[in-house]
Length: 267
Image (cartoon, rainbow, N blue to C red; front, side, top):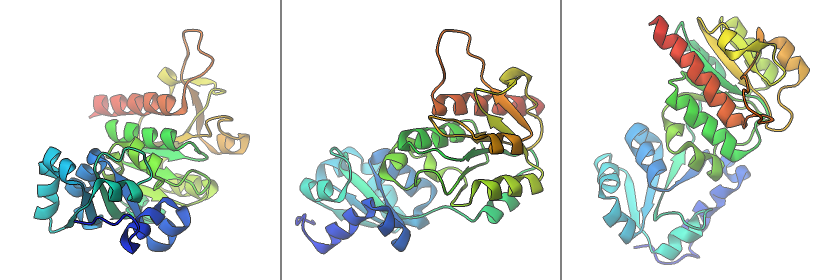
């Protein structure tokens, strides 16, 4: 058992809370049983080490057994060691050091199906929103999520937790500029739908046929005019009550589910 919270190993894991260290090492920390379970189940080749307290090992034996069956390193640690490794006050007894899983934009686009459903995050800065959009995209059966260089780091621990494991379920591309993303999607034949409260097309009137991408903006100011102008249509979710607006993650999920339902009906 690892018992020293001041050891070099613990410090190295803790350092992954810094974006500069994640960028340099190509690794990040997934905290909590759901994140670790999905990483081990879906992308075990990306899991470097699993750290678990004795209590959490007893509580989640299936996760530990799956990790060992996949020939992963499983380290038993004292609770204070795990607390020193993690960014949260309550890491729930288990965490895993994982290698980053994003793919280059060209690679992601080459593998898209002919009726692809894609979600693009342009300037999403809130970790909770970013993670929830990825989770919503996964639930709606989207084929990919693309996150621009102006958005929050997807490997931020708050984003990873907010995805609740969906981070490992669908292709992800990070780091390209918004103009490059939109241009690459257009060249691939993917229609661009800007989701914005200023849109003139209501969601139920939008053309959701064929391959298309929902382009989502910043939580506070939405999409800039040049991005809206670069899209094929600007669509808004109708508000029938007195709410001033919808949360970004909520609006994104509604749009993605509308596309998923349209695709399900076609198939």
